[in-house]
Each structure stands twice: as C-alpha cells, then as structure tokens.
Image 1 (cartoon, rainbow, N blue to C red):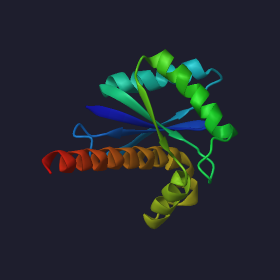
Image 2 (spheres, helix red, strand yellow):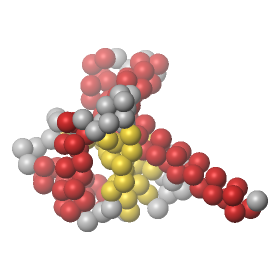
Image 3 (cartoon, rainbow, N blue to C red):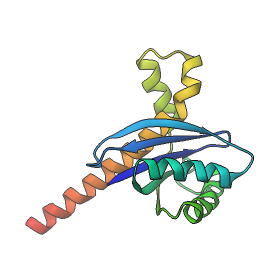
Amino acid sequence: MRVLGIDIGSKKIGIAISNQEMTLATPLTVVHRSSQKSEDHKTIMSIAHEWEVELLVVGIPLSLDGSLGIAAENVLQEIEHLERNTGIPVDTFDERFTTISAKQVLHDQGVSEKEQKNIIDQVAASIILQAWLDHKMSASSSIKEVVSD
C-alpha cells in the first residue's frame, strides 16, 4: 500500500510518497495553487492514481499549544473537499515545526536558500508522512507486544 503525504499551503502544496512497505517517505513534487481548489484536488488525485495511493495523510498546522487555530480550521475544511473530490480517504497528522525541520535538513545538505524555495514544501510533506509512518509502525509494534504477552 502506498500513502501520499500532503503539506497544504496557500500558494503551494507539497507532496510526498511512501514506499509499498510503508516504512519510508520520499519528497515527490510541489503543486502550485491554481485559482480553484477543485483543480488542485484533481492534480492531487491524478498523482494519487499514478502511484496507486490508497490513503492521503495531510498535515494539520496546530497551534503551539496543540489547539486548532484559523490555519488548522482552514486546512480541515479543505480536507473535507479533498476527500470528496478525490474519493480517497484522508488521515491527518500534526505538522508543527515541519517547515523548520525541512529548512534545517536542506541547509545541512548544502541546498541554497534559492533552491530551497522550490522544494521546501515537498520536503515538509515527506517529514509529515515519515512521522505518520513512524507513529503507525510504533503503534503496531505496541499492539503486537500486548498480544504476545
């Protein structure tokens, strides 16, 4: 099964993809926003079908205290439309600090600030997706431990 990680922004949407084993997230592309969210969703659906994706994981920009602010509410509203427009189930995951982490990763790899602007969103999407994958794997391991005890 493959999963698409999505970092929704006002100008760009970062996209990452998992491997079949759902252990590794890889930056994939950036969708530049059009004037219509439904068109953006069609683009995401096209990518999802190309990669045979069965689930979308969308980052939620929670406030530092973990509450839902205006940005998170806007993303949640878009998720409703995304799920309806694509027909693909959506899961959410906390995306706090992912852009900061993505910038640090790219900086550590020697990517210039100018080049970072083109790929930062897909790297942030991969960080969201990897955290989600790791969380799922950890939860699965915990269940296996309880069952085997």
